[in-house]
Image (tube, rainbow, N blue to C red; front, side, top):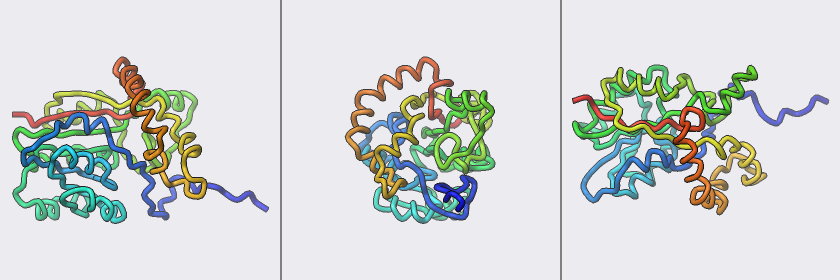
Length: 260
């Protein structure tokens, strides 16, 4: 008998599941100050709403755009408004937001999934307040692990992460900044999140996840081990990453504003 395959081919898209680790993107959250005013945020590609909920906790009115119906149904309980639409469907989005302008527009791990990210950025600029900011998170394509793999002749897509099978665009710090400049935006801050412990996430998931449900990633987020990591290890990794971000960064974080 042939050995039963434990996993399907990663580029088999027949199964429309939603495998993404719903962590809060701390690289985005730290760029947003808490507020008591009527400020608002548009979260484009909101996923299941972990980030949106964290932004709501800072006092903002959060609108979420999410095309995946499974994720959109979950995010509706975490933010103020949900638009279940493809992020390219600007007619529907304008119809929903009407004349509203946002203080922040967030693209958290989204632009790498679209064919023309520059066009997407330009399309959303009219929804931003004149003094508003765009917050962008992109995976760092040339982190240390990918460099090692490429050197060994390995280029394999994965279900999630930097080599996510649905990524159609890959970015470095330089190319990300050039894209924002082409969109007539000014980059006012560059930040990052570390990729050291996170590089071993597949192994960690197998250890901490429920053996009967390997997709139950909440096991990791809710575990005391994760909380200890965030409190004690993450700050050390972040300090190391700041020294050589191109090598050790997982996410490229950009804070931008429209050119005056």
